[in-house]
Length: 435
View 1 (cartoon, helix red, strand yellow):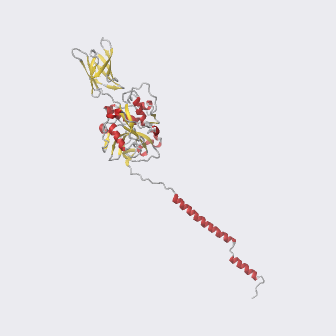
View 2 (cartoon, rainbow, N blue to C red):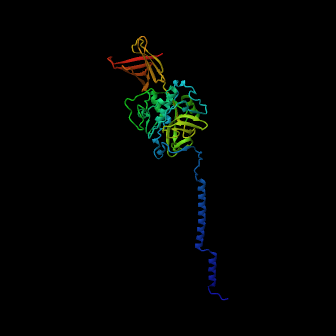
View 3 (cartoon, rainbow, N blue to C red):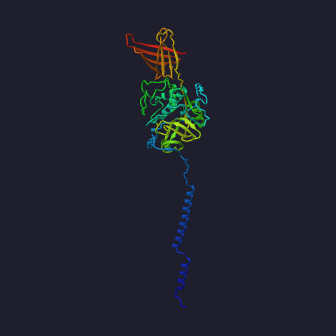
Protein backbone atom coordinates (compact mmCIF):
# COMPACT_ATOMS: atom_id res chain seq x y z
CA UNK A 1 0.00 0.00 0.00
CA UNK A 2 1.29 3.38 -0.91
CA UNK A 3 1.13 5.97 1.95
CA UNK A 4 1.62 9.67 1.59
CA UNK A 5 5.10 10.90 2.10
CA UNK A 6 4.31 12.53 5.45
CA UNK A 7 1.94 9.79 6.71
CA UNK A 8 4.14 8.79 9.62
CA UNK A 9 4.24 12.36 10.81
CA UNK A 10 0.47 12.68 10.65
CA UNK A 11 -0.04 9.40 12.52
CA UNK A 12 2.23 10.50 15.36
CA UNK A 13 0.33 13.78 15.74
CA UNK A 14 -3.00 11.93 15.87
CA UNK A 15 -1.78 9.62 18.60
CA UNK A 16 -0.58 12.62 20.56
CA UNK A 17 -4.04 14.21 20.40
CA UNK A 18 -5.63 11.00 21.70
CA UNK A 19 -3.22 10.38 24.55
CA UNK A 20 -2.79 13.97 25.84
CA UNK A 21 -5.99 15.75 27.12
CA UNK A 22 -6.58 19.30 25.98
CA UNK A 23 -5.78 22.22 28.27
CA UNK A 24 -9.42 23.32 28.34
CA UNK A 25 -10.60 19.86 29.49
CA UNK A 26 -8.01 19.85 32.28
CA UNK A 27 -9.19 23.25 33.43
CA UNK A 28 -12.78 22.06 33.42
CA UNK A 29 -11.82 19.10 35.58
CA UNK A 30 -10.15 21.44 38.05
CA UNK A 31 -13.27 23.63 38.17
CA UNK A 32 -15.45 20.58 38.88
CA UNK A 33 -13.20 19.47 41.71
CA UNK A 34 -13.13 22.97 43.20
CA UNK A 35 -16.91 23.28 42.95
CA UNK A 36 -17.47 19.94 44.64
CA UNK A 37 -15.04 20.86 47.39
CA UNK A 38 -16.75 24.25 47.92
CA UNK A 39 -20.16 22.61 47.95
CA UNK A 40 -19.00 20.14 50.59
CA UNK A 41 -17.49 22.94 52.70
CA UNK A 42 -20.71 24.99 52.52
CA UNK A 43 -22.73 21.98 53.64
CA UNK A 44 -20.37 21.51 56.59
CA UNK A 45 -20.73 25.19 57.56
CA UNK A 46 -24.51 25.00 57.34
CA UNK A 47 -24.54 21.82 59.42
CA UNK A 48 -22.28 23.42 62.01
CA UNK A 49 -24.55 26.47 62.19
CA UNK A 50 -27.54 24.24 62.74
CA UNK A 51 -25.73 22.48 65.56
CA UNK A 52 -24.62 25.74 67.19
CA UNK A 53 -27.86 27.66 66.72
CA UNK A 54 -29.32 28.98 70.05
CA UNK A 55 -32.92 27.84 70.16
CA UNK A 56 -35.07 30.03 72.44
CA UNK A 57 -36.14 28.10 75.52
CA UNK A 58 -39.86 27.57 75.62
CA UNK A 59 -41.01 27.95 79.20
CA UNK A 60 -44.33 26.21 79.73
CA UNK A 61 -46.88 28.72 81.03
CA UNK A 62 -49.07 27.81 83.98
CA UNK A 63 -52.73 27.46 83.27
CA UNK A 64 -54.33 30.78 84.28
CA UNK A 65 -56.34 30.49 87.47
CA UNK A 66 -57.83 33.96 87.19
CA UNK A 67 -60.11 36.01 84.98
CA UNK A 68 -59.42 39.29 83.21
CA UNK A 69 -61.51 42.10 81.79
CA UNK A 70 -61.89 45.85 81.70
CA UNK A 71 -60.97 47.41 85.03
CA UNK A 72 -60.50 50.86 86.49
CA UNK A 73 -56.86 50.83 85.30
CA UNK A 74 -56.87 48.72 82.12
CA UNK A 75 -57.07 51.87 80.01
CA UNK A 76 -53.54 52.72 81.16
CA UNK A 77 -52.01 49.67 79.45
CA UNK A 78 -50.93 51.88 76.53
CA UNK A 79 -49.44 54.49 78.87
CA UNK A 80 -46.62 54.74 81.39
CA UNK A 81 -47.23 52.23 84.18
CA UNK A 82 -45.99 54.66 86.83
CA UNK A 83 -49.23 56.58 86.39
CA UNK A 84 -51.01 53.90 88.43
CA UNK A 85 -48.13 52.36 90.40
CA UNK A 86 -45.25 54.39 91.89
CA UNK A 87 -43.27 52.23 94.34
CA UNK A 88 -39.63 53.34 94.09
CA UNK A 89 -36.96 50.78 94.91
CA UNK A 90 -34.60 51.92 97.68
CA UNK A 91 -30.87 51.31 97.58
CA UNK A 92 -30.59 47.96 99.36
CA UNK A 93 -27.05 48.82 100.42
CA UNK A 94 -28.49 51.61 102.57
CA UNK A 95 -31.16 49.45 104.21
CA UNK A 96 -30.48 48.16 107.69
CA UNK A 97 -32.46 45.66 109.73
CA UNK A 98 -34.62 47.40 112.34
CA UNK A 99 -35.13 45.62 115.63
CA UNK A 100 -38.63 46.00 117.11
CA UNK A 101 -38.90 48.51 119.94
CA UNK A 102 -39.70 47.40 123.46
CA UNK A 103 -43.22 48.79 123.01
CA UNK A 104 -43.88 46.24 120.26
CA UNK A 105 -43.30 43.40 122.69
CA UNK A 106 -46.88 43.90 123.92
CA UNK A 107 -48.10 41.98 120.86
CA UNK A 108 -48.13 38.20 121.16
CA UNK A 109 -47.17 35.92 118.27
CA UNK A 110 -50.85 35.24 117.56
CA UNK A 111 -52.27 38.59 118.68
CA UNK A 112 -54.52 38.88 115.64
CA UNK A 113 -54.15 35.53 113.86
CA UNK A 114 -52.51 32.16 114.27
CA UNK A 115 -49.68 32.10 111.69
CA UNK A 116 -50.06 28.31 111.51
CA UNK A 117 -53.68 28.58 110.41
CA UNK A 118 -54.46 27.49 106.87
CA UNK A 119 -56.18 30.79 106.12
CA UNK A 120 -56.82 34.24 107.52
CA UNK A 121 -58.72 37.34 106.36
CA UNK A 122 -58.51 40.70 108.16
CA UNK A 123 -61.96 41.56 106.88
CA UNK A 124 -63.49 38.86 109.09
CA UNK A 125 -62.30 40.72 112.21
CA UNK A 126 -63.22 44.18 110.87
CA UNK A 127 -59.56 45.05 110.49
CA UNK A 128 -59.56 47.04 107.25
CA UNK A 129 -60.57 50.54 106.24
CA UNK A 130 -62.39 51.45 103.03
CA UNK A 131 -61.07 50.86 99.49
CA UNK A 132 -59.59 54.00 97.92
CA UNK A 133 -58.42 55.06 94.46
CA UNK A 134 -55.04 56.69 93.81
CA UNK A 135 -56.19 57.86 90.37
CA UNK A 136 -53.70 58.98 87.75
CA UNK A 137 -50.83 59.53 90.16
CA UNK A 138 -47.93 57.24 91.10
CA UNK A 139 -48.81 57.42 94.79
CA UNK A 140 -49.40 53.77 95.64
CA UNK A 141 -46.64 54.12 98.27
CA UNK A 142 -48.77 56.66 100.17
CA UNK A 143 -51.94 54.55 99.94
CA UNK A 144 -50.40 51.25 101.07
CA UNK A 145 -48.68 53.00 103.98
CA UNK A 146 -51.84 54.81 105.10
CA UNK A 147 -54.01 51.72 104.62
CA UNK A 148 -51.63 49.75 106.84
CA UNK A 149 -51.56 52.54 109.44
CA UNK A 150 -55.36 52.65 109.47
CA UNK A 151 -55.47 48.90 110.12
CA UNK A 152 -52.95 49.35 112.95
CA UNK A 153 -55.16 51.94 114.68
CA UNK A 154 -58.33 49.92 114.06
CA UNK A 155 -57.02 46.73 115.63
CA UNK A 156 -54.43 48.04 118.07
CA UNK A 157 -56.40 51.03 119.40
CA UNK A 158 -59.98 49.90 118.88
CA UNK A 159 -60.80 52.64 116.37
CA UNK A 160 -63.98 51.90 114.45
CA UNK A 161 -63.23 51.10 110.78
CA UNK A 162 -65.92 53.45 109.49
CA UNK A 163 -64.53 56.40 111.47
CA UNK A 164 -60.91 56.40 110.30
CA UNK A 165 -60.06 57.85 106.88
CA UNK A 166 -56.63 59.44 106.83
CA UNK A 167 -55.31 61.87 104.22
CA UNK A 168 -53.06 60.45 101.50
CA UNK A 169 -52.80 63.96 100.10
CA UNK A 170 -51.09 65.12 103.30
CA UNK A 171 -48.59 62.27 102.90
CA UNK A 172 -48.08 63.17 99.25
CA UNK A 173 -47.63 66.88 99.95
CA UNK A 174 -45.96 67.04 103.35
CA UNK A 175 -44.08 63.86 104.30
CA UNK A 176 -41.20 64.14 101.83
CA UNK A 177 -41.54 60.40 101.16
CA UNK A 178 -42.35 60.80 97.47
CA UNK A 179 -44.52 62.35 94.78
CA UNK A 180 -46.83 61.36 91.94
CA UNK A 181 -43.65 60.14 90.26
CA UNK A 182 -43.07 57.55 92.98
CA UNK A 183 -42.08 57.12 96.61
CA UNK A 184 -41.33 54.69 99.42
CA UNK A 185 -43.84 53.60 102.09
CA UNK A 186 -41.26 53.01 104.83
CA UNK A 187 -40.39 56.72 104.68
CA UNK A 188 -44.04 57.47 105.49
CA UNK A 189 -43.70 55.30 108.59
CA UNK A 190 -40.50 57.16 109.50
CA UNK A 191 -42.29 60.49 109.17
CA UNK A 192 -45.24 59.68 111.44
CA UNK A 193 -42.95 57.99 113.94
CA UNK A 194 -40.86 61.14 114.46
CA UNK A 195 -43.48 63.89 114.10
CA UNK A 196 -45.25 65.17 117.22
CA UNK A 197 -48.68 64.95 115.63
CA UNK A 198 -50.35 62.36 113.43
CA UNK A 199 -51.93 62.22 110.01
CA UNK A 200 -54.88 64.54 109.24
CA UNK A 201 -58.20 63.11 108.15
CA UNK A 202 -59.36 62.96 104.55
CA UNK A 203 -62.14 65.43 105.35
CA UNK A 204 -59.62 68.09 106.35
CA UNK A 205 -57.31 67.56 103.36
CA UNK A 206 -58.92 65.70 100.47
CA UNK A 207 -57.02 63.76 97.82
CA UNK A 208 -56.20 65.63 94.59
CA UNK A 209 -54.10 62.99 92.76
CA UNK A 210 -51.46 65.63 92.11
CA UNK A 211 -48.36 67.13 93.69
CA UNK A 212 -49.74 69.99 95.77
CA UNK A 213 -47.90 72.24 98.22
CA UNK A 214 -48.14 71.37 101.91
CA UNK A 215 -50.78 73.47 103.70
CA UNK A 216 -49.48 75.90 106.33
CA UNK A 217 -51.77 74.83 109.17
CA UNK A 218 -53.09 71.31 108.59
CA UNK A 219 -55.53 69.88 111.10
CA UNK A 220 -53.42 67.13 112.66
CA UNK A 221 -54.59 64.11 114.66
CA UNK A 222 -53.11 61.58 117.08
CA UNK A 223 -52.95 58.84 114.44
CA UNK A 224 -49.21 58.22 114.64
CA UNK A 225 -46.71 55.39 114.12
CA UNK A 226 -45.25 53.77 117.23
CA UNK A 227 -42.88 51.36 115.49
CA UNK A 228 -42.20 49.62 112.19
CA UNK A 229 -39.72 47.11 110.79
CA UNK A 230 -39.00 44.97 107.76
CA UNK A 231 -40.67 41.57 107.65
CA UNK A 232 -38.14 38.77 108.16
CA UNK A 233 -34.36 38.69 107.93
CA UNK A 234 -34.08 39.78 104.29
CA UNK A 235 -35.84 43.06 103.48
CA UNK A 236 -35.52 42.37 99.77
CA UNK A 237 -37.76 39.29 99.95
CA UNK A 238 -39.74 37.99 102.92
CA UNK A 239 -40.80 34.36 102.96
CA UNK A 240 -44.42 33.24 103.18
CA UNK A 241 -43.87 32.03 106.75
CA UNK A 242 -42.38 35.41 107.75
CA UNK A 243 -45.31 37.33 106.23
CA UNK A 244 -47.79 35.11 108.07
CA UNK A 245 -45.99 35.71 111.37
CA UNK A 246 -46.04 39.47 110.81
CA UNK A 247 -49.76 39.43 110.03
CA UNK A 248 -50.48 37.27 113.06
CA UNK A 249 -48.55 39.51 115.44
CA UNK A 250 -49.09 43.03 114.03
CA UNK A 251 -51.90 42.69 111.43
CA UNK A 252 -50.72 45.73 109.44
CA UNK A 253 -48.34 44.71 106.62
CA UNK A 254 -47.50 46.32 103.27
CA UNK A 255 -45.47 44.85 100.40
CA UNK A 256 -44.02 45.70 97.02
CA UNK A 257 -45.17 43.67 94.00
CA UNK A 258 -44.61 43.76 90.25
CA UNK A 259 -47.65 44.80 88.22
CA UNK A 260 -48.01 43.32 84.73
CA UNK A 261 -50.77 43.34 82.12
CA UNK A 262 -52.62 40.48 83.79
CA UNK A 263 -52.56 42.30 87.14
CA UNK A 264 -53.98 45.45 85.59
CA UNK A 265 -56.82 43.50 83.94
CA UNK A 266 -57.46 41.13 86.89
CA UNK A 267 -61.11 40.71 87.86
CA UNK A 268 -61.26 37.50 89.94
CA UNK A 269 -59.61 34.19 90.79
CA UNK A 270 -56.00 33.62 91.87
CA UNK A 271 -53.47 35.65 89.88
CA UNK A 272 -50.62 33.32 88.88
CA UNK A 273 -49.04 35.12 85.90
CA UNK A 274 -45.44 35.93 86.87
CA UNK A 275 -44.53 37.76 83.64
CA UNK A 276 -42.12 40.61 84.35
CA UNK A 277 -41.32 41.80 80.85
CA UNK A 278 -43.13 44.37 78.74
CA UNK A 279 -45.61 46.77 80.30
CA UNK A 280 -45.41 46.99 84.09
CA UNK A 281 -43.89 48.58 87.18
CA UNK A 282 -43.31 48.28 90.93
CA UNK A 283 -46.42 48.75 93.03
CA UNK A 284 -47.25 48.73 96.75
CA UNK A 285 -50.27 47.06 98.35
CA UNK A 286 -51.46 45.95 101.78
CA UNK A 287 -51.48 42.22 102.55
CA UNK A 288 -54.69 41.45 104.43
CA UNK A 289 -54.73 37.68 104.52
CA UNK A 290 -53.71 34.32 103.12
CA UNK A 291 -55.22 31.00 102.06
CA UNK A 292 -53.04 27.90 101.77
CA UNK A 293 -55.68 26.04 99.75
CA UNK A 294 -55.26 28.72 97.10
CA UNK A 295 -51.53 29.10 97.78
CA UNK A 296 -52.11 32.83 97.75
CA UNK A 297 -52.09 36.14 99.63
CA UNK A 298 -55.15 38.36 99.85
CA UNK A 299 -54.26 41.95 99.01
CA UNK A 300 -56.01 45.29 99.35
CA UNK A 301 -55.22 47.58 96.40
CA UNK A 302 -55.56 51.32 95.75
CA UNK A 303 -57.27 51.22 92.35
CA UNK A 304 -60.83 51.63 93.60
CA UNK A 305 -63.65 49.08 93.68
CA UNK A 306 -63.61 48.91 89.86
CA UNK A 307 -60.56 46.66 89.97
CA UNK A 308 -60.35 43.03 91.07
CA UNK A 309 -62.93 41.78 93.53
CA UNK A 310 -64.20 45.17 94.74
CA UNK A 311 -60.62 46.33 95.25
CA UNK A 312 -59.19 43.05 96.58
CA UNK A 313 -57.29 40.21 94.89
CA UNK A 314 -55.78 36.79 95.50
CA UNK A 315 -52.14 36.55 94.32
CA UNK A 316 -50.05 33.38 94.34
CA UNK A 317 -47.38 33.28 97.05
CA UNK A 318 -44.49 32.88 94.62
CA UNK A 319 -45.35 35.31 91.81
CA UNK A 320 -44.77 39.00 91.10
CA UNK A 321 -42.21 39.29 93.96
CA UNK A 322 -44.90 39.25 96.65
CA UNK A 323 -43.14 39.87 99.98
CA UNK A 324 -40.51 42.17 98.51
CA UNK A 325 -39.67 45.04 100.89
CA UNK A 326 -42.58 44.00 103.11
CA UNK A 327 -42.89 45.93 106.39
CA UNK A 328 -45.18 45.88 109.42
CA UNK A 329 -46.29 48.92 111.40
CA UNK A 330 -47.77 49.56 114.85
CA UNK A 331 -49.92 52.46 116.06
CA UNK A 332 -49.13 54.86 118.85
CA UNK A 333 -51.50 53.95 121.69
CA UNK A 334 -54.47 56.27 121.99
CA UNK A 335 -56.07 56.44 125.40
CA UNK A 336 -59.76 55.79 125.17
CA UNK A 337 -61.65 58.58 126.89
CA UNK A 338 -64.59 56.42 127.84
CA UNK A 339 -65.19 56.60 131.58
CA UNK A 340 -65.92 59.08 134.38
CA UNK A 341 -63.71 62.17 134.73
CA UNK A 342 -63.65 64.46 137.80
CA UNK A 343 -62.68 68.11 138.02
CA UNK A 344 -59.25 68.42 139.70
CA UNK A 345 -60.62 71.49 141.51
CA UNK A 346 -62.97 70.04 144.10
CA UNK A 347 -64.28 73.54 144.91
CA UNK A 348 -65.23 74.40 141.35
CA UNK A 349 -68.48 76.22 140.70
CA UNK A 350 -68.51 75.01 137.13
CA UNK A 351 -68.45 71.48 135.64
CA UNK A 352 -67.85 68.97 138.42
CA UNK A 353 -67.61 65.77 136.42
CA UNK A 354 -68.22 64.36 132.98
CA UNK A 355 -68.82 60.92 131.49
CA UNK A 356 -67.57 59.87 128.05
CA UNK A 357 -69.22 56.76 126.62
CA UNK A 358 -70.08 54.76 123.50
CA UNK A 359 -66.49 54.68 122.26
CA UNK A 360 -65.94 58.43 122.63
CA UNK A 361 -69.15 59.41 120.84
CA UNK A 362 -71.26 60.67 123.78
CA UNK A 363 -70.59 63.33 126.45
CA UNK A 364 -72.58 63.66 129.69
CA UNK A 365 -71.76 66.72 131.88
CA UNK A 366 -72.72 67.59 135.46
CA UNK A 367 -72.60 71.17 136.79
CA UNK A 368 -72.16 72.54 140.31
CA UNK A 369 -75.54 72.99 141.95
CA UNK A 370 -76.95 72.68 145.45
CA UNK A 371 -77.77 70.38 147.05
CA UNK A 372 -76.84 68.02 144.16
CA UNK A 373 -75.06 68.54 140.87
CA UNK A 374 -77.14 69.63 137.89
CA UNK A 375 -77.50 66.95 135.22
CA UNK A 376 -76.84 68.44 131.77
CA UNK A 377 -77.89 65.22 130.06
CA UNK A 378 -76.07 63.57 127.13
CA UNK A 379 -74.94 65.27 123.93
CA UNK A 380 -73.00 63.98 120.88
CA UNK A 381 -69.19 64.12 121.08
CA UNK A 382 -67.37 64.71 117.80
CA UNK A 383 -63.73 64.08 116.91
CA UNK A 384 -61.99 67.12 115.41
CA UNK A 385 -58.27 66.92 114.77
CA UNK A 386 -56.52 65.86 117.97
CA UNK A 387 -59.48 66.83 120.14
CA UNK A 388 -63.24 66.62 120.54
CA UNK A 389 -66.15 69.06 120.43
CA UNK A 390 -69.65 69.08 121.93
CA UNK A 391 -72.56 71.51 122.15
CA UNK A 392 -75.30 72.18 124.70
CA UNK A 393 -78.36 74.35 124.17
CA UNK A 394 -80.04 75.01 127.51
CA UNK A 395 -82.49 77.61 126.25
CA UNK A 396 -81.10 80.47 128.31
CA UNK A 397 -77.53 79.74 127.05
CA UNK A 398 -75.50 77.94 124.43
CA UNK A 399 -72.31 76.18 125.54
CA UNK A 400 -69.59 75.16 123.10
CA UNK A 401 -67.18 72.61 124.57
CA UNK A 402 -63.71 71.55 123.40
CA UNK A 403 -61.90 68.58 124.95
CA UNK A 404 -58.25 67.60 124.57
CA UNK A 405 -56.22 64.96 126.34
CA UNK A 406 -52.98 66.29 127.83
CA UNK A 407 -49.60 64.58 127.83
CA UNK A 408 -50.05 63.57 131.48
CA UNK A 409 -53.31 61.80 130.65
CA UNK A 410 -55.62 64.42 132.13
CA UNK A 411 -58.43 65.96 130.12
CA UNK A 412 -58.65 69.67 129.38
CA UNK A 413 -62.06 71.27 128.82
CA UNK A 414 -62.55 74.71 127.28
CA UNK A 415 -66.14 75.87 127.52
CA UNK A 416 -67.60 79.02 125.97
CA UNK A 417 -70.98 80.04 127.47
CA UNK A 418 -73.12 82.53 125.53
CA UNK A 419 -76.16 83.71 127.51
CA UNK A 420 -79.46 84.93 126.13
CA UNK A 421 -80.42 86.78 129.33
CA UNK A 422 -78.62 89.53 131.24
CA UNK A 423 -75.72 87.38 132.42
CA UNK A 424 -72.25 88.05 131.08
CA UNK A 425 -70.81 85.61 128.59
CA UNK A 426 -67.87 83.65 129.95
CA UNK A 427 -65.03 81.34 128.85
CA UNK A 428 -63.66 78.78 131.30
CA UNK A 429 -60.94 76.13 131.34
CA UNK A 430 -61.23 73.02 133.51
CA UNK A 431 -58.89 70.07 134.06
CA UNK A 432 -60.30 66.60 134.70
CA UNK A 433 -58.70 63.37 135.86
CA UNK A 434 -60.01 59.87 135.38
CA UNK A 435 -60.84 57.86 138.50
